[in-house]
Amino acid sequence: MIKLDQIELHQGDFHLQQLCLDIPKGCYAVLMGKSGCGKTTLLEILAGLRPVQAGSIWLGHQEVTHLKPAARQLGYVPQDRALFPTMRVREQLGFSLRLRPFSKEEISKRVNEMARWLNLEHLMERLPQSLSGGEAQRVALGRALASRPGILCLDEPLSGLDQDLHDEACSLLESIHQETGMTILHVTHSRHEADRLANRLWVIDEGQVRPSA
Image (cartoon, rainbow, N blue to C red; front, side, top):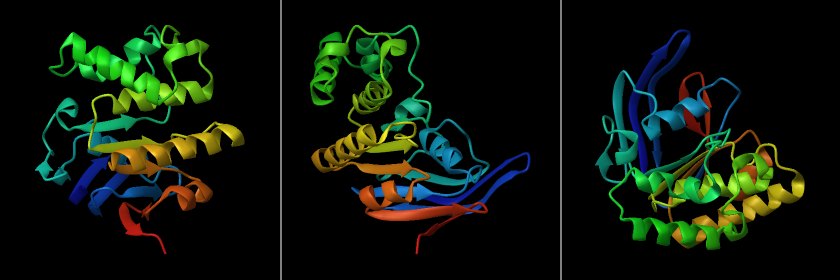
């Protein structure tokens, strides 16, 4: 479950005013809206990367409004994927685990599980600059999923992929949702993408979120 209740955020000319959003547990939710309307900001609020002036944030049955990002049990894939340029794929996959109290053995086990699941085993010693767009996307997903979060937030995760890779990535996201049952919030500009993936569709406009017609 994802719940935003009466969220307020004011930064310069940008405002979210009494924004509310309620996404049921296990839903694949898609959020659409014009550029600059606050889609990425909303994901950053959920991930704990941007503080709010008022309102509450709930993930599952826990209020997380004032918790640090690592304590929120949320996986986040930003639009630029934000892979670390000096880390090899193996290190990227284990990054979030090293921020939590996992043993070296558990980190190694989960990293190898992610590599097998996402077909990354042959890329483990590569640096990001040697990866294709589709490979980098899978690494970013693996890094977000390695800690087995209950919620996954995706910011334009399929942008920049050609049609074949886009279809392949959609299939991967469908598989992740089916196999894990996690709640997913996916931001996109693509109505085709939304129609294929979404259980529920929302639109953000003028600082408010509403169900899509």
